[in-house]
Image 1 (tube, rainbow, N blue to C red):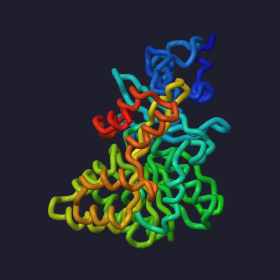
Image 2: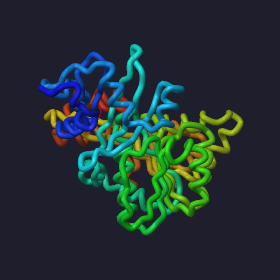
Image 3: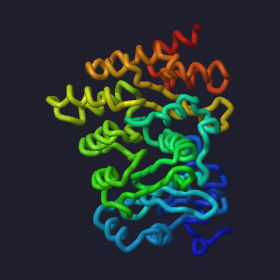
Length: 359
């Protein structure tokens, strides 16, 4: 039986990685738990219940003096670190019921290819755009970071360019291959996204990754970068191309909406909206994607603010590599990967999907 005194967070993370779990969860008065394929379960029957002192010891050992001070002030902390030879970890530390707790996301050290992830080849073609803005969207935990890492790795392997990433915290580590890669972590290498993004434009970048579009200032600078010859990747917590465009334009004052639509029509290259869907055999999940490619027709619709036209254009845009969420789900159903019931739970337009499955 493992004793509390001998337990370390790195040991627990190694066990979680060996179990192929996506997350490790620890809190006082509970055994360490994992999340795997959306199911929460104990990490091991041999592990003891953790007391508050043990949880605090594990989590405070991860922080620098400055991070401890920030944690004392804000009661929240995002951390990124490596367990050598095992994985990267994105760790969120917080308080609950007056005691410390944490959820640690297990991130593989090796970046998987698009083929290994089961993602369509058009995502590789998107990386060859010389400039502009690419948005990967979806809810928390849907694999946006993994998809972006695979796309950036293609650039890293093929293009001798200068790549800058700004993340909170760093998850996948991109070693220099053909590209020269600079990775900056908010809270360690920079105070925030905005100053780091402004500074990146003076660092001769060709490709920029912004971990998340959080405000109008960040979005404005990202648009400027995409308009001035840089290829910019980022994420938004939206579930479709329509919702993404609606969210982006509504971030700005109403009198600026027309101008933002015009800028987005010029800068946007693609929107990839992603969901993770449980496989029917219980062996993990697959990524279902809605893909919008900015053809001249799509760009015109965006410029005019006709976002409601985007779904129809995606539906009819297979030649350009576009697909709706429903089309993606139907392919998985026909291939026997997911069930019809599962597809319906994740439908883009439920009535349409029901008809597609009947056919």
